Length: 126
Image (cartoon, rainbow, N blue to C red; front, top):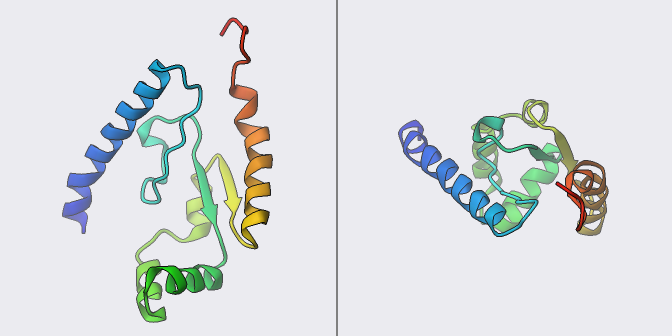
């Protein structure tokens, strides 16, 4: 896995940068990149948002949508950074527990707090 990651991760980070630069050239002020394995700021982005959920909910979700058995999901989680450590790397932590409507409301509020103030309004001298 380390060898594969060493090959793939630099390419993914470079590709993200290309896509973000293209979006900015096209006038976008915000770009959102989803990348569960890239929980640090080494890619140079302005904000790092990390999602967290309690272990039991994560296991239930992994087995329900991912076709994994509980032991497989537990083994996969054991290779990942623990949620508390993951959250320490973040500018913004999003708790994804609860319903989808709950999570959407949380994200909307966090967006208003952390992203909206950074977006220039039309006509602002930038």
